[in-house]
Amino acid sequence: MKEFWKLIEVRVVLLLLFPLLILSACGNKERTNVLIPDGSPSFSIMDFSKPLPLNPLAEGWYHRTFWFVSPMDITFVTKDGHPSIKLSTDNSASMLFRYVDLSLDQYPVLSWDWMVEKGIKSEISELTEEGDDQPARLFLSFEAPNGEKNRMEIIWGNREVKRGEWKFIENSSFPHYVANGGDENIGKWFHEKVDITYLYEHLWGSALGVRLTDIGLFCDTDATGGQSVAYFSDIRANKRIVQ
Image (cartoon, rainbow, N blue to C red; front, side):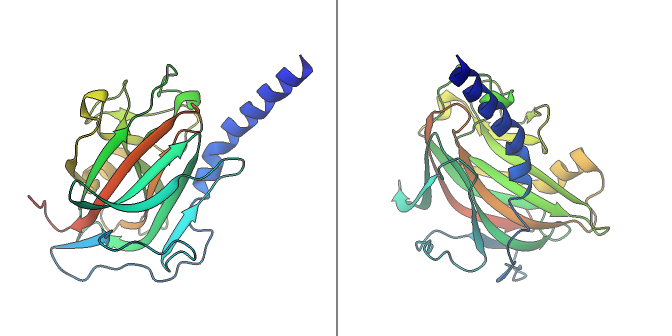
């Protein structure tokens, strides 16, 4: 019985520490080779037409892992004609960041292609800390002209949140915007376009002068102990919506 309660205590501590660990996900490594726009109407933030060097990781990228948690598995494939990064989890989680410096005044629209091949099957509510796993997330970090920093995620919902909705979890350090999801969309490719200026203003007010400083690919099943497989392709910043 003592061993049982010890395991419960460890689990509670990990759940409490998880948001703090995520908050330290960017900014604790030297920011080198920061990606800046080339002035074109649309330019690539993450181009997977060629495999990304992982060991050592290419300069300007950062793989954030968590204490006591195995990292997601990263491979590069062409899936259904899409040059992609394949992110797989098995009771695991990590975040792959690209350092950027993008003005939302100039590049308000984020676009990407993604497909979830294996979604999360769990009876635990994804609206709770205990069930806060998503097969695919985009983690965004912002900095305002006054130095204020904010973070949010764009996610693939499981069963309880739908496209266009927001997901807020008590004790979580950042909000989640649902861009797509659902079992009915598993195995299908989607091209997404999101006005991140609109999302920022919905949460924090004026986006004038705000800059996007980090974008991370984040997949996790460590809370529910499940598995997931997701693909991302052609993540771009746009001056206007690209059809």
